[in-house]
Image (tube, rainbow, N blue to C red; front, top):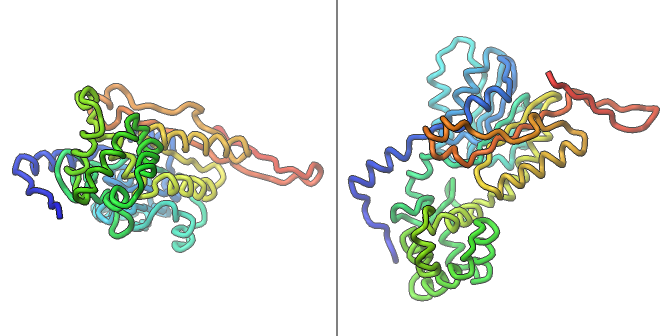
Length: 333
């Protein structure tokens, strides 16, 4: 059985630095969500708890904030952030260790009717990169790629799927141009020994890609790791279900903000919000996605591919007895 090698002191220092997490598009999120002190707010992806902390600060007595994350460590960070809020009139906080795909059930269980503002930050934090769960190809560690305990791991996928299934995962979720070559190399490698560490997977990826590809600006394992992470956590299915639940949970005039980082998830977000707008549920506000400023990108490399899309639910929906159709009234205030 393969076991990851001990981390060197230099690697531990690098991981500590990597674990620093700066939440992206903070100013833009706060401006577009327009949180009022007595609002009900949902942070569906706690991550480093940066957005959670600022949203909590925008709320006051009578306000409610619900924080959700599948990663127990992210939940703990949010609890710590809330504990540090010493205001006498701070909002009520519910911090839940769960997947945002279960948003409807979570709100029902908490007795929360509708939300005035909902945020999804689909990026993953520096804390997750630094955790020894196989998210990063920069060090050798167990090939898990799961946010919580249990469930199918990346190692399960690469060691039990057929060559065609592996290739489909890499192409569909990673848009990897050498998906077939990498899949072929993975099958060949696991025939000799099960692939149980990130190092073993990186070696297989190198064997399945041309030399020139390995010398590019982007690490040749980037897209494969992305694809396996998405597959192991069913991120696409969770995103579709979570968006549908969020749109249904929005109060009249409520706003939904989603930050995406790669084309696959952004396409799903774009289509879901477009369909909701076409059905009369609300409007995109603004119509175009918001990108980070040049200053933010220079200060935080992770922000460079971020896109913020915002949806505002119709202020009211009434039924016209004479026409027998739904009439939607929008608020642009």
